[in-house]
Image 1 (cartoon, rainbow, N blue to C red):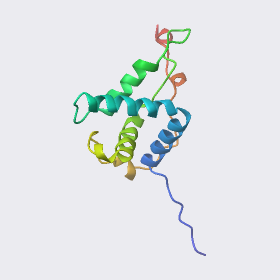
Image 2 (image 1 turned 60 degrees about the vertical axis):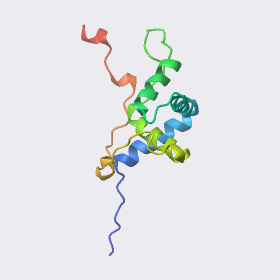
Image 3 (image 1 turned 45 degrees about the vertical axis):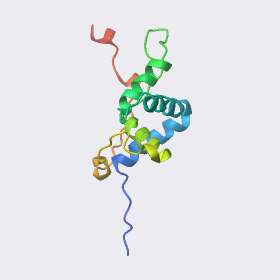
Image 4 (image 1 turned 90 degrees about the vertical axis):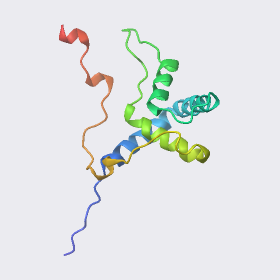
Length: 127
């Protein structure tokens, strides 16, 4: 009997899938990523930080909920994917975002879901 080898998802695949799902659910983030990156080009930057652009997106879009907590969350793990997607969509700007080799491609995916704000303690719980 021939054994079937199951393909095991890598951590890279898992994060990338989550980033793609997030992007589909929040297309405005991509629009702002492109807009703010183009502003950086216009201001003369030859390279910049994708995480810096994520922070600006947070600053420009976030609102506090009734408890004074952030309503809009962007996982920092996605910034590298947005950087790569940008340079792929706009090849003239290849290298604008400095990216690293993805070591997560050789790491087995974890079964844990992406953490949400509900997964963390409030400061009041520690008092």
